[in-house]
Amino acid sequence: MKITLSKFFYNVLCNVPVCFSLCFTAMMISGSIDWKIFTMNFFFSFTIAMYVGLYFPLIKIGAKFTSLFKIKTDTYYHNIPYRILSTLAISFIFYITINPVICFYNVIILFDQDIYSFLYSLAINILPMLVIGFLTSLISDLPAYKISTKIDK
Image 1: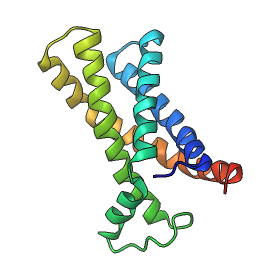
Image 2: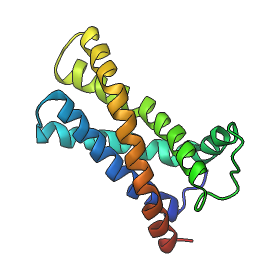
Image 3: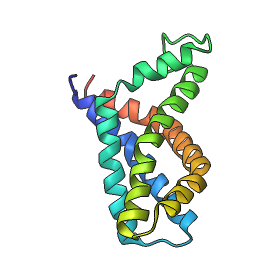
Image 4: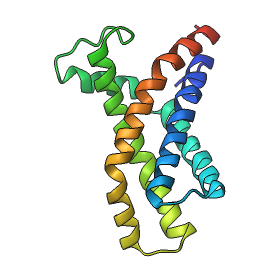
């Protein structure tokens, strides 16, 4: 799989706001903001998100999911239903790859708690993380696309 300059910049421009908002949301759910932990979580989640964004066939997965609803997938830019459903599928993939890893790191490794605390933390984070990840992705997607295509067509 070839990684182009535009694909790299697109992923950076999408993943920075998504990872920032997810880490900030997680800190708000925990009740306090520790900027050291926030920064570690941000860079850890950003690294995972970049790997997923660059090496997983997210566009194909989003198009396949959208086609299940009989929505045309020939254009993404001016097709709102396609954008929404594709972003939903892709946000779910990011959620299942990033959230359990970061949650495990924080609860089990960093704070030395038990597996029940880990499962509880996962459970209370499901809805806010999915919603914030989806909305941030939806908002950052088009500006990231416009900027990255100007860098490298």
